[in-house]
Length: 296
Image (tube, rainbow, N blue to C red; front, side):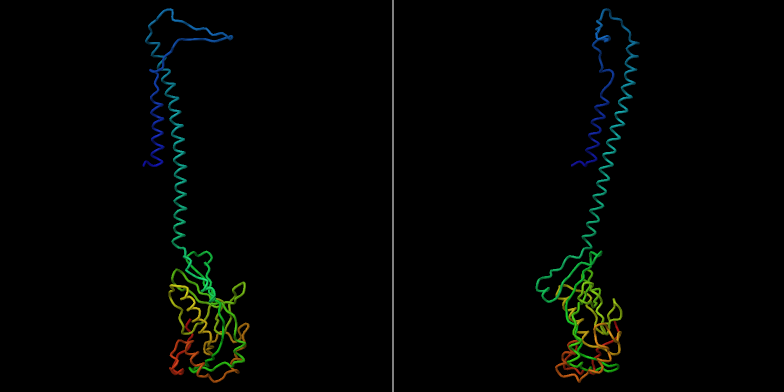
């Protein structure tokens, strides 16, 4: 199938060929008439006078005028055809540019994951990152609960008293940012309209949390992986490590001195909870477990 440009050039050639087919030799006169004062006078042939010289002059003059008009017409045809081709090329370039943009956007777009109502009931939701098509932000609604306190240079934790633990329970949002199938960041936020930072004892800045020896997963495959990641982060926050405290008096939480004054011996049941929080064997001696470091 011929292209648009080829079809236009073919039509142009047809018009030029038709135009050039008109010659003075094909123009014949059927007589001469003059009109003036509302009357027409028709001249009839009375005598034939052969004059090749006069006929040649007339034909030459007519040919010159005809050629001049044909050239003007050809120029107009060329101009219009070129304008049409230029306009078509501009439209084609614009179409291809937008097609490339759309394809690039599609290639970089993060496909919305297969998140269900059951995931929402567990506290998980997901949104696209503004201005970044390949990034998603997962928001997991959970509960901040401090249960243990680890003193400096000690590996055996103390339990926070039951009375104080009630004051250490807060609603929290664990925010997980992903790019493609990579987990890029885990951070803590308040469940308010501004998603403000959730300040806790190991919150180093508004955008930085100290997660101790816990390392976030590098990749995710399903929304359940994100839920597991968020729950692991909450488990890490159950323990206050005195050796790596970033804030003594975080907003909305008791002062660290108050926590120190409300410690009790850890029970066997709480030992299992503590071991679970740090991913240790419940039967392993707590003294031998490295529960926290200042590694981010």
